[in-house]
Image (tube, rainbow, N blue to C red; front, top):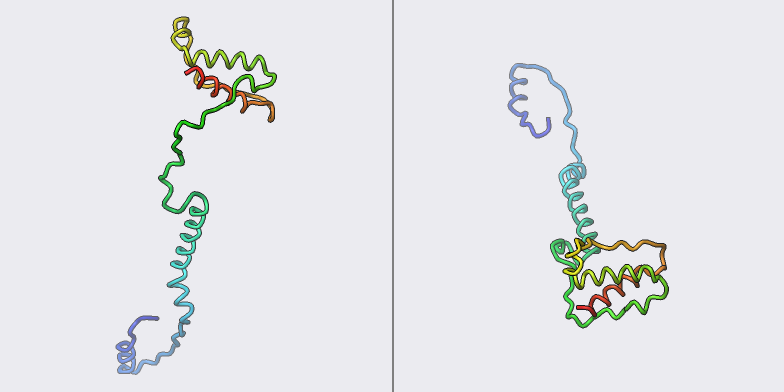
Length: 144
C-alpha cells in the first residue's frame, strides 16, 4: 500500500520463509499535483470570475454596501408645466386635483379624503406619461 512502511513485514516474511509477490505501482507526480492542487486551483478560478463580474457591474468587489444615491443641491428644478403637455386634458384635470390635494391636504381631509399612496399612469408608449409626471412635479414645486 502506498505510504506504508513494509520493511518490518518483509523481514518477518523472509524470516519465516513465506513467499510473497507483488508490485507497487509508481504514482505519477503529475497526477499527485492535479489531485492536490486541482481543487484549490478551481476554487481560485471561481473566486476570480466572481470578483471580475462584481467589478464589472458596480465599481468593485467591495462596493456591495455602498448607496447609489446622489446628492442634489436643489438647483436642478423641474421646469415642465401642464402647459407643456399637449392634449390629455382629462388626465391633466385629474392630476391638478392630486397636486391641489398634496398642496392643501387639510381642505380635503375635512371632507374625509385620504392621502393617495400614488398615481398610476397607464397607456401605450409615447403617449406622454413621463411628461405628465414631470409636469406634476413642476406644478407641485411651484405650489410649495
